[in-house]
Image (tube, rainbow, N blue to C red; front, top):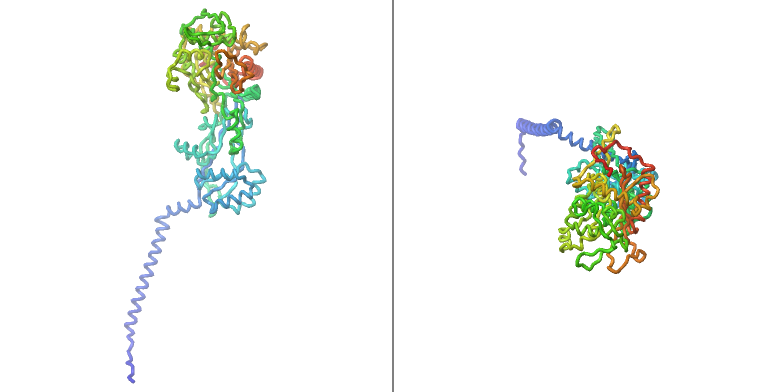
Length: 635
């Protein structure tokens, strides 16, 4: 067997190989250290500000702070709309893994109704998931304590305390104040379109109706911000900086709460409305629509049952009858038409007719009847207003024609918005040839003009329009915009008053025509045959006015109106417009009572009660004098 050859080791070569390997390993280590040092340099020096910002973004949050909503006062400083603290259970969907299970568990723990759960998920559809959504509002102290004991089990759920709107006088002021409620998808879209999204970042409610909506820009305020430090669980540790919100402005209305409550009481359970204003400024002192409802129901979300009851009520409590109710003005506009007839010289002061209770057009068989079946005999323009003679105004309307009537009454403001600071307003309808052609594709017939002479036919007006037109008569052509807002408060408590707003005046050629019409309205209340004389017996003030009875359906030629045989919703509306004192008016009153019958026996007594209360209890000088721009109203 051959022996293996023995190799002699080359120690020098091995040493060189080891040295080379060590050098390579050292180079690799140095290279890796270089990479580490390079990364450390990049993190600690080159990108320090970027990573610090990211770190602070996890540690520091900027949170919007909602401003406190401005308060609303009446003219005497009585608080009408306030902010009260409430607790609500709120959920941030983004921070919850299984939202449905969490809501179910919370509902069992906190006794949350199915309706509240449905509302939550409905709101969630239009809300960003990182924003809190209220699951239950108006928590009691016991409910707050109960959840606090279990809060650790529900990350992303918390109890938040905030100020919420409250209306201490309930249904007394609903149609004036309106209400605030949760911001919905439609509201959010309008906010975004107006470029106000940032200013509503932390706001939950917004004005929905009435003053709350119309003067939202004054009442809302400006959002603030606070920087807070949070821990890894998102809980706030401390506040670093605060940019406080600017609260909304406190506003003062022309409304007198005590007068408003008196007006509410006079209407009792009757459907209708009363508007009371200062004729020399247009300031609305009281405006009540009956029936009403409690606006507090809407602040935290009204139940479906309650809303359905309001919506389906035959009495229509959701409608503001003062600004949205459209009624034939009836005989309340006879003074206006008399003024137009006199000023256009269609008639003069001495013009008379012999009223037999019937009016016919030449060569027409149709008969228009006076409310007094046997007529009023010899009647001039003054007596026609005093006794409310229909036949005189049939004749006057025939002589004037629809074109003159429509143009003049449009100048008085009929068929147009008054400009009152409420979005909930109708414009009524002032008929004309063009309107009938557009509406019915029919020509205007002379027979259409005759009932317009007594405020019937296609003519409709809102009570606030009627009140504005009476103020125009009082002011001899000066037209004021009805105003609910008197002004807003500064920080020192001073009130910055809104000046009265005027519209294009109603011009007449001869001032004496104002005297004729206004003195005739005095006779309505004080004359021997005045239609409102019985309603104003033995009053300590001198007033003037005009009654009206609005017929809601046509009566056949040989038929008579029997109230007991007519369905209630078809019975006549009772109406009255008036002012006092006669020589220097302080207040004007408009009353409309639905389906109540005659204006002289039903609406005028209500107006008398309102005026009695005004002159017995209400001072007309609570505000600084703003009458400098007003004309002397004495006729």
